Image (cartoon, rainbow, N blue to C red; front, side, top):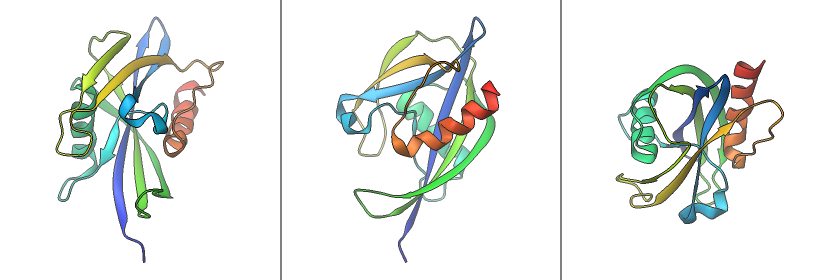
Length: 149
């Protein structure tokens, strides 16, 4: 049986002038991945919510976030390791102040330490067709269903 790995993903939104926006990221270190949202691996002994907040802090340098809802999970096989991945998707709300675009240098104990992420708040209005990396699209679909009815 293939080993499985738990991951968390943060679909962080904010509302500006009644426009719901999603925090997205890209990186020159992961151009193959396309547009993503913060998330990563759950460490040994860590619960899902602790991992979620840690990943958001490490990758986006945000702490003023709260969980709105659990968006479910999706499973897939890693193209690089062959491991079964279970990705737990969460909707979080950002309650602080932020530029519309910003950069963060990751500080972590993982392979992304030192990577530069470019962040941008993107409108989730119904006429926009935002596409995330394939492994992240299921969570975005659930998020749209819940907030855009």
